Image 1: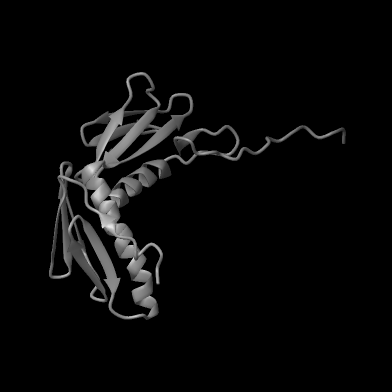
Image 2: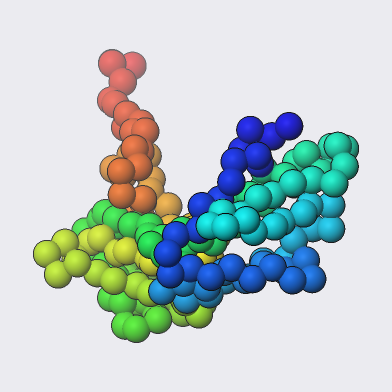
Length: 183
């Protein structure tokens, strides 16, 4: 039995959960999220917690058991606290300017790159640290996808570390070429 799957998901105050027809809808102060539940998994609400169980004991059911529990837990955290990823832009002349749900980046190419965020994603830039962009939203998967997409426009290179990286990410540096000894 899955160690993760058998843990109950605690529903905090201010969050409502509806379960009907293999769908779960979680509503909270930051918004609402919904997810389809596989037919081999049973989800039920007891008091202030959600219990996830599996009908059968085959490989698919076992793999879906912990996954479904974590997806529901991520939904509850998303509608109460939300998710946030921070990206750091490193390089001379590299910059980004968020404007509502759009971000314009100058990353050393001949043209600026514009990225329009999907619904529910918010870009912010700290006034003190212009090189750090924070991406926030209630859906963990979409926040991670947007951060990865923006990072893919200019991945950090291993010699000087220029590019877009996650805050706290360690870039393994390579030594540059050195002049050879006499020929």
